[in-house]
View 1 (cartoon, rainbow, N blue to C red):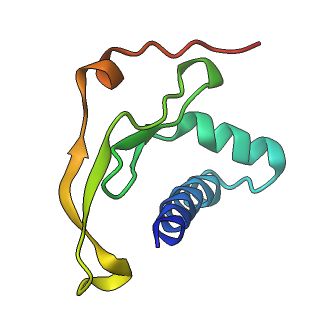
View 2 (view 1 turned 180 degrees about the horizontal axis):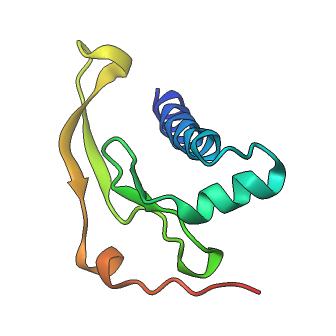
Length: 98
């Protein structure tokens, strides 16, 4: 289902973060935070890219996938279009919170 897919994407992002921390040689809390700031974009499997980095510059994906019902497909849905990004999402300005 959708939640399983979302969990997979989050898990893939977490794996990329931990790989960055291992590469940096520091698995402490501070080391993981530094690894997050050093990471490049992570593909979110049909939901665009999550841009890690310093807190002030992080951005969640702006794209999404559109599904259609197909009772013969796993989970009863199939992808109609991947990485759809509408103008409103593309132009939205995220602001850092204190």
